[in-house]
Length: 409
Image (cartoon, rainbow, N blue to C red; front, top):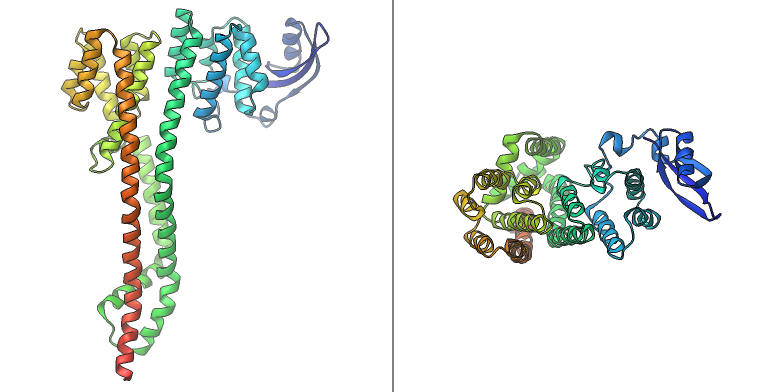
């Protein structure tokens, strides 16, 4: 459905601006008149003029443009407005007016219109599944049912901000080593492919017996110089094939997720991140009033690891048959004993949400510390590796020169 930007006057003559969705210009004008607003200017937004369909029809709500921090910010603002006693529709109108992000502004305008026409907030959010996942909508539904929607939105904002903070810390810690790796690899590739051949060409023309290390360097350099394009093609094809196998095939995704958990160095870090996400998501859902079975089903879809998701699915079936969550998770062998113990204590005390939050906090701190330690060790290892490669190149070039000097003397 097209979205229109409007400038209008209310019954007191005050100017209003905003967005409204309608099937046509005439329908948009009629919608505004029904609100006792008289349109002065009405124009279709640029995205719709270019032929892009609206998210309410397609379900594609431009997920790459609206990020997690944008959703967290809007959620926090909406929780604050509702907590201050402002009704839902005026709160959404305020958010539409103050949101600078164009796609989020358009999304909020559609949600406001749907709510104004009688839909619940959950129904309005369901039109944008790529922006608001089932986890988000189930929490909002529980908040609407309990009459504490502003508290649930605050928990959602806390959850989104904590996830964003953890991702940012891990990415920041990994940014420098990755930058060093790619820059160092590019420099070495350039040296071996384009610089070394010009130097070693002198040795080839002298028809002198060369050291083995120099012969190896010349062979590697000649291969790179002749087939550098083939190497790039192989790397690109391997990368695309790998991405396809882990995103489009069930077996490939499962194998990759298993490797992420079981790998020697990175496995423990990924395991801690998965346990933290499981615990915090489950705790947030339970605290918001979502039933345990429904919460486990939601967590299974957002934990982002198929191996862990399968174990959660099996645990949900056992819980449905009357078993405790801690006992069924213990049989999987995937969840650490301390996690099982704390969940068991939470079940016995009737305060499992608090225990899950403690588990999440502990694992997030451990994951952050592990990443920092790993990157601090990775940097000198990378420097050492690059130093050894450069030393190999330098020795390979200088050794024949020293031998020639000996012959001249």
